Length: 294
Image: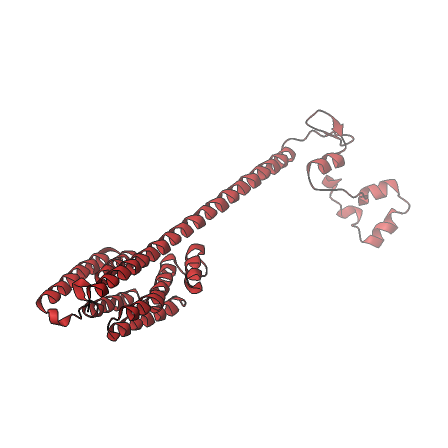
């Protein structure tokens, strides 16, 4: 398989870029059609000695498919225009490739698969009905105007055309189904990865919720009734032990203590130097001190 087609199929599986699955499928199938037209069908037609007009039709279709692939790389899809190109190629090839005696009828099945992939609802059924009517019209034209058909020169030429046509049409269908399957597998793989990421995120959220509950439980302990000695201000913990309030708060919160003296204690403990020190640091005078905070 040419490198470009292999890369397109890998893009379908991996979901590279911002393209949707339908866009990736369209890109891979249009490139596959161009590869088959240029590298396989045209050389086989030359070997079989088929009319040169048929080569022009196939090469024109290959050029159209390649252009559709290039547009798809930029996120632009023309599914209906591509389908019209397929229909025109099949109808022109019908008259140049032996009609009902040739292998061109095999390729109608690939067109039907294309329609089933890229169209939905009413459009899908409408195009399928038109395909059936188109096929019946070609059979009728073959019956009423056999002179329109370029017949094979020998039975061997017809056998060779049917054999190669069967192989090429089978390869075409296989590529389309393979690309579709690759896209499905890629989407399923991405879905599984998203599910695993979601499960990991839920586990992490549950762990954080548990840690938060434990932190709230510790906070609630400090918010409840706290037994404290009226004289020395020691605190009784959950085990009934009395400890300094600084040590208790430090053990149950992230707070830490630094020690100093309030203005009232400064005046009580150091009456000679208190006023000078308090004046230097801008402490309030005794009349400004709230006795409730002593």
